[in-house]
Length: 267
Length: 92
Ligand SMILES: [Zn+2]
Image (cartoon, rainbow over all chains, first blue to last red; front, side):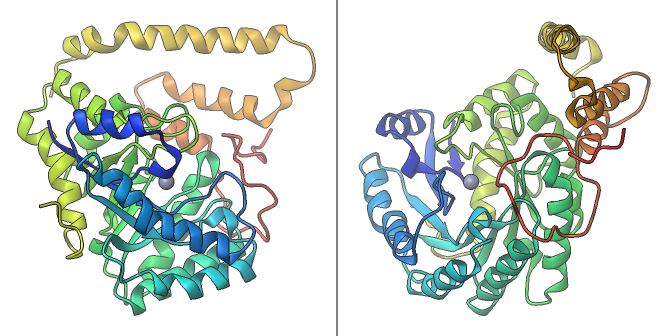
């Protein structure tokens, strides 16, 4: 089995997770910028984080033979502090040309507030001006439906945005169609309790079709499983999916989406 | 695609276990003290359960929609970062 883990917060994971992922067949890992579990106090905190994502973490992953890529942004959980968000947005371009930076992400909404929307729109503008791909986080639980609708409308209303270069992540049964019908890619996150289980993920692949879907574990500092993607592949085998279909979903699809930026090369 | 029998062979035991867990969860709430029955989480949970019966298609989607904020206007300001899993204004 081979797969690409397109969404994992490796700075929060221990070294043994890298070993387990590589042993399971992981060929590349992509790490969107994320909330640390607490609000960072200054733009310099973000500068250090972006250095970690573009310098230190790729070296750490390389020790396991694993190519490491990243997406940069300030998370929607920190968007109520608009002054800090503006400072971070002004700094991001310093990092965009680094070799492992795939685009802007994971941007999006958390509680669907006006400031979150304003900061989201500023990220989209930056991505459009710099021709960057976009990775979108949709809100949790009861806020996901409303947030996904707002996000899809905002993206559709910006004529500069090419839907095929945007992935809307953390979709579930009630939001997958919103993203896919508008031409975006969609990500299914396999996460204990709050997102999606392997059987439900496979249900969605069967219902919506695998054409513009990827699976990810979104493992971070919370209750999450860095091997959720290969475990779901095993579940697909139990459900009678062919090895070719499994490979296409967990390796071919992320490869196809991410290869739209020439920086994504896994040799 | 698998047959109904194959799906049952694969998932019935797991679904049965989750069904009993749900029933025990509701028993636990009813045995406990306080006014929790009026909590929007309980009200929307019971409403979501009603979608499991009958021949309605897309039951998972119906449950998720019942547990979602259906409004469309952005909120003025985010006063918390977390989510409870049910819309706090779910009608009684
Ligand atoms: Zn994430």
